[in-house]
View 1 (cartoon, helix red, strand yellow):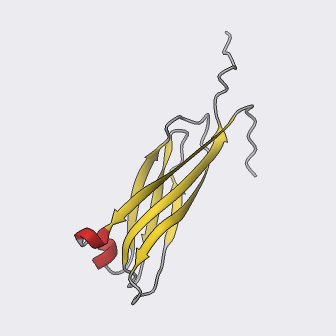
View 2 (tube, rainbow, N blue to C red; view 1 turned 45 degrees about the horizontal axis):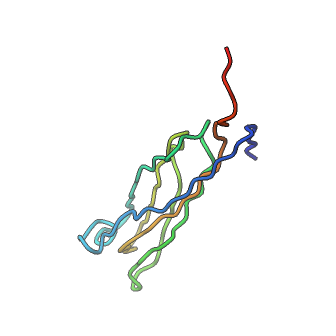
View 3 (spheres, rainbow, N blue to C red; view 1 turned 90 degrees about the vertical axis):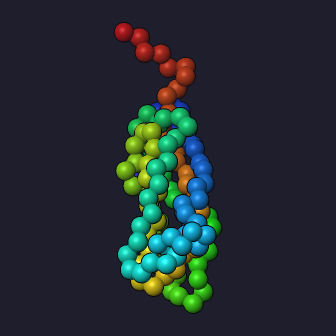
Length: 116
């Protein structure tokens, strides 16, 4: 369990189209075997420490003639952002993917003063 000791908790969310490989003949649509798409997300406002991040597939468009295989996750999470990583393998053909994400963590309390 991640405990947030701060008096202020921040929540940020967003969505990002990761690729549209059907439109341009990209590797997710035309390739075979292990494939990966990686995208950096920068938070609009930094957290105090790395937040908890949840990533999900908000939309995906696949070829119905092949197996649908997908793995999506958040990696390299910092207080300022993270990477969304989408992976597929085998004969899966993915035309498009949109990832939705949610970050929850401690944020600086505007009423807290640093007095030295």
